[in-house]
Image (cartoon, rainbow, N blue to C red; front, side):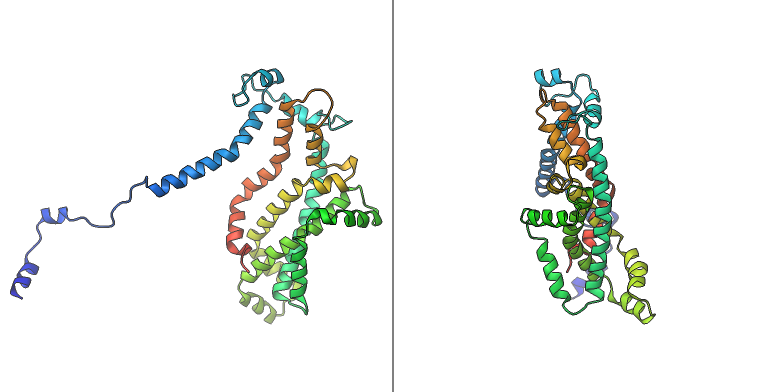
Length: 310
């Protein structure tokens, strides 16, 4: 007992205190786990970016340089002639007007289809969570089941319906079809998001006398920016990249950009111009890429905030 007290009362010298370490031991930056992780990320990043690199450098070359050069080499004298031709004068069958008409057709299809489908899906999701009616669960199950039906199965019935509506071969037909087919998955996203919001807000608004639309516009919408961005990215990407509905329902005068790109690449007039084809491909993909890169952080935030909860 006395020996213990003597040891406890013995003062610690400065040299002894300096030798003793304090705090957690620093971890090395390069650990086997980090090396494997970053190696995998770099590998798959290069794997997905490599085709884009080939397309861009090929579009900046002349045809003689493409024929006699290395496909992976940088252009000796970069020029944008292929880009100009792809936009203004590339042949898409019998006409040589480039991608410009298809771009504006895609814009006319994408904007109304995206706005209408997102708005209707938001109202559907809001009603299914906060204003449940008799048979709402059955309605929701049927709606979600419809999103798993292959589009090809519905082509002929849709042709018949649009023909009876007198809109087959017009932009209105493509807009209607994209709006209808976009609603099931968007309704699921909005329903799950609204279900993750505090129900006390809805109940308090009901106590204050707010109705269906007032609660939707003044309470739900201001809190739903992340999920709206998720829906926006999904719809713009899906509609802009669509080929099937455009080639079947739009009509030859209203082909969207993807159909025009296919016609440029598969044109039988003259020899293939690979630089023009690559430039046309990059131009076609610029819009969804821009939308994603501008609002990518909101996409991740929307998914994390409840887009996949339920």
